[in-house]
Image 1: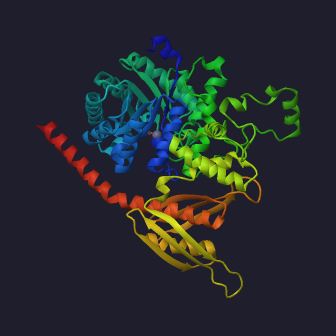
Image 2: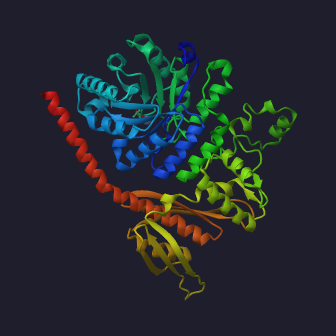
Image 3: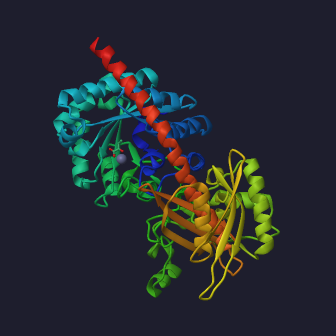
Length: 537
Ligand code: KIV
Ligand code: ZN
């Protein structure tokens, strides 16, 4: 049980990688990928994990529901607008969680009120209070966010926050939704909110800063200096547009500058690197080399002067230890004599904690790979652990691939594929192409029946040596949406075909969901209509 003193010294880390992060273009994840990340966030010991926005789609609903019932440790939060349909969906999705939170929001700034909501000040307050009261009936832990709070008239913002605290909100979140603020302004705003909101001592004040001007972390820390005790952030700083405050940077700033902030947080910092890499692998978006705390260069010293300084005394150029954030000291890991225990330990360091059945699969794949390769690197293990995303194989699985490769003026590369559908039937197709990879993509596209253009295609070796595994990443555009796929194999044409199929499977699942989503929207409208009827009555 935390005391009031504890509350003042502790900073609550609210991770929203699965919601604000996943909303960002190019960072969409399948349900099984979300669950994997959720387990890693629990192992990282974030305090609150926003698992998604259940009313947004049946897929989001399912993901939040599964995370709520499977993932232990953090409080699981779900986002909802201030309306009956959204709040009911959030509450239903959260039912299985030991600790749950409904996070409800409405925009408060003049521009959002006038152009988006078409509501006046009084109507927005009324909707906010009604939303919080409804949420409170469904869940004791209620967070309220005033979207675009930073651009809201301060006296009105104070009125809104005072009213929702009276209605039962327990956390008050102050988003800088468009990343417009500077640290000094954020500090002044939080200081004022602490002075003027009625009942502020009963709640936790929270900062949610976007990075449009590159100030999200600085702004979050400024809010903390002025009394915020929850920071909303994401792994690698991923989020809408330029992203949110990066979790790893906030955590390490508070730890490294302990003498300044005098606060502690419960995050297991040695898991930061592994979780960052896991998120990057799941989404197919690499971490920039120069990214603070977790980028490949974060602890690399290139210039002679720096290397000399480091050898003389590490602190000349290093303010954190690589091992504090779980940075692997050496990338060289295991060989064919390594056992299951060593493999499990190494996987843990790079962010994977597989269940027994999954561990069996990875261990057999590791043994097969170690037979073919002298040395198995972290990157090989990462590829092995990620190689089996059950959803990458749904609805279509690649059961056979034959390539006839040829060079010369009259050469015609041909690929034939056999794809099995999850309902059990198999379709075989052949196609010619500019090269063997193009031919394989054409054959797969024929079977799946979606026409998508490849907008990005990359193959790289995941480790060293000519026996290395190849990892292919493909981005496909279909119906105006972009889908990423990844495949790994020691045969780069097979890796490419698997990556393309992964992307096409995502497209197939997405388009199959559209009908279902329309049904949910109709239901939500019906619930709102009922709410309005009963409010009028
Ligand atoms: O940026 C924002 O305003 C949000 C809210 C929904 C909290 O993400
Ligand atoms: Zn946001």
